[in-house]
Length: 256
Image 1 (cartoon, rainbow, N blue to C red):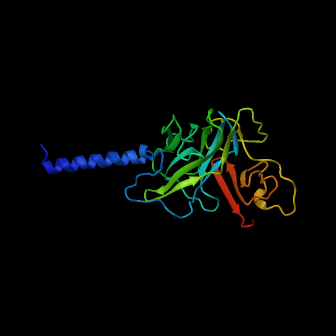
Image 2 (image 1 turned 135 degrees about the vertical axis):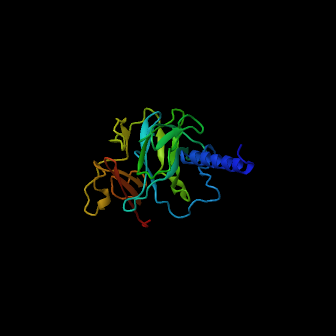
Image 3 (image 1 turned 135 degrees about the horizontal axis):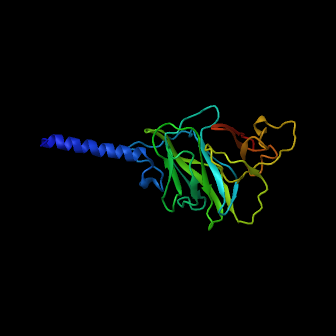
């Protein structure tokens, strides 16, 4: 029989191993609302996150599916270690809405349940990951604004909370959305059509280069709404998808 001290040491090691395995396989269930990873006494970073969340459209009909991508801005690629991602109501930020219908690679990410089935996606292991694109289905019983919100970890001790996407509006099934774009996905399986805030821009001499391709080769999102077509955005994010490569461009202005 093993001495008592050795038994206690062995039991402690087993508990630590199990705890480590559970932590590395995704966000803990306690993180459903506050999205905190429970990394002991480690607190979130207070700097600007090196990550962005890009939805493939500014509007989506009830019950329809769209894509949402987590990545880093162009020129500053930062790998993703761990994350938890959900869609939240704008008016009730603690309310999770909709559900995810697919993940890019089940070996590194998976869907899980917080409030409703598959309403959350998280990592399956702590290995470094590139930009990730998920399919999300809008709820059939909700109308209004939502945003995708995440906590994203670069490493165990370095993570950012409240990484947020631009506003997405859930509209009625009969709403006419006139523009479409090919879905941005890293899988080889086919994906449903998605809507996007893309339209052919007028030709202007002073148009910034970031708008080039917004009508055919890039996904572009700007504020205020519908500013992409006129090239007058105060802030704009452009995403170029080339196979599994994602190139992000961000630009802002301090003009009133």
